[in-house]
Length: 163
Image 1 (cartoon, rainbow, N blue to C red):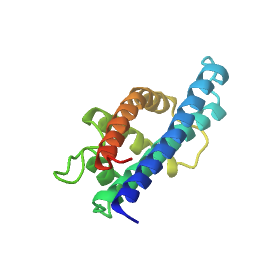
Image 2 (image 1 turned 60 degrees about the horizontal axis):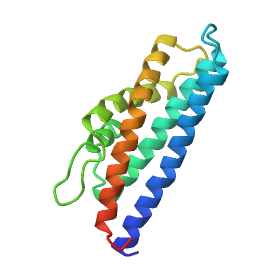
Image 3 (image 1 turned 90 degrees about the vertical axis):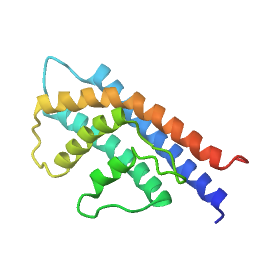
């Protein structure tokens, strides 16, 4: 595969994941608007919210992993999730631009921590204060991620002017 085809494949992969991210966020907003009764805190509502937040972050982390593998693929094995997220804020001179802004990073760090907690939390009842906290972070980070990925995809396209 040529370098041009490889970059195009990465762009395609990012764009496909962005469709999923938007779909998850759209479902979340519809759920919050139409399904959630704010006066009652049901276990099923908490499960849905936690699952959407976890899936959103997992999808985004997959994008970051593909970018990392394409450009540098050097992650600390013991803490690769956080290492990966941190590296997305780096500009690597003569290699790639930063994928994430510092503002997006700090918000995503909270979603990463929640997703990690959620993966190993086997109870069905949830801490609503924690859920409300990550919901606020999700609301803040979605537009930042959109902007940051727009900029990064534009960078990739500049690598392939014929695209």
